[in-house]
Length: 349
Ligand SMILES: NC(=O)c1ccc[n+]([C@@H]2O[C@H](COP(=O)([O-])OP(=O)(O)OC[C@H]3O[C@@H](n4cnc5c(N)ncnc54)[C@H](O)[C@@H]3O)[C@@H](O)[C@H]2O)c1
Ligand SMILES: O=P(O)(O)OC[C@H](O)CO
Image (tube, protein in one colour):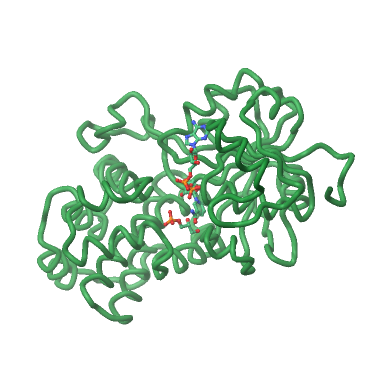
């Protein structure tokens, strides 16, 4: 049992790569209840203590019971893909009370009021798009929400490699509670009140990681990758400001920190998706062979529409959308960007 035995366990919802990595990190400081909707997986985890090729701490218990999770845990970390987040909250919501605190680790957007299977096919407006903390507020009585975001490639964390993250919340007690259970010599936790900026940075960097993967897949070098990350960050800031965030979150752990990790690592699903596109594979073949679609692909559909809604000049987003969804030639997209009349280097300060 952990040092904090006697205290309430901390809940994690979603036993995928990141949920499992976070469960093991939490286990340094707390007992953990890890929720999976798959009862066989719950039995396997509890009997073998192995999952996704790693050993789970003895402080982690798996459960298939959302009611038990809400009853035993005051602090919960929902970490499921953005497409399923609202449904998960819809199921969890009835069990939650105002004393619960939720810190999500999901990097994507929720869509409602417009087809989720084709969010790029309609006239998307800001009111159709929710961040995960907004979904939590919409689907439950919980007020004290937070977001966990940073350079947190799950496979590196599972190997025991150290890194840092950000817990962003308007509420000091959420930041404090999150730090108390997650901070360790393996995982430095920063705090911030800029939750919208952290959520947007986490979602938007996946799109730039797709682009960076495409360049790598085409055999291009670090100069161009650096420029894509630089101009990609600029587009992220423009989106963020249009959606009501301040620019500052984009220059910290959840912004440039996560952007560099995701846009340069072959361990990122978003980078890998782009890499395979750059190597000439089709969107269909890549999607069929990846168990979960990279979040950035769906986010790209959404941000392309948001760019129209906010009237933003975001040429990288535009070209990526054309390449990924419209079969536009990568070399022509690159030529377009290289001859784009960029005038000001830094235009968002
Ligand atoms: N993998 C990473 O390195 C990493 C790092 C930071 C953040 N994230 C973010 O975390 C989120 C999850 O990513 P992941 O890598 O863990 O994905 P994953 O595909 O490895 O796992 C997702 C898990 O969520 C579960 N799930 C889906 N719908 C559910 C529901 N309704 N109720 C309960 N469980 C449900 C699935 O069964 C699966 O186990 C994504 O938004 C991703 O961007 C991932
Ligand atoms: O590209 P992914 O989905 O593997 O995730 C990368 C993480 O968000 C890195 O922090």
